[in-house]
Image (tube, rainbow, N blue to C red; front, side):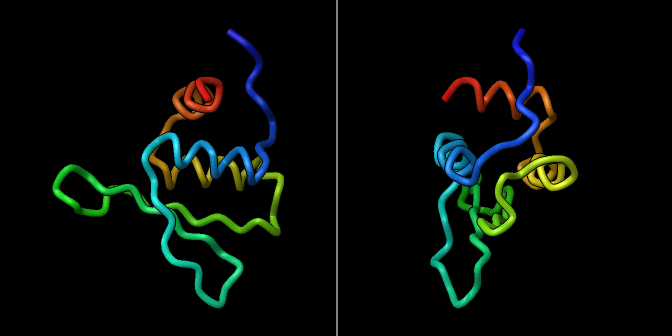
Length: 83
């Protein structure tokens, strides 16, 4: 197994969210992007908030994003590697 990346770019994070089935909320007058993952019945399963100004995502911020996505470190990096 390869080494886990210590940081992730905003572009890679957006590609990952799209690959996992997340859809972006309409952008409002804010720098934050909100992404939603709905279950098969249309209910909200996860909501992830990205702020491009904090790129690259690393350390505690990356851990927080993984928690918002409800993915373990191993699941997150496996999904990232599969892109």
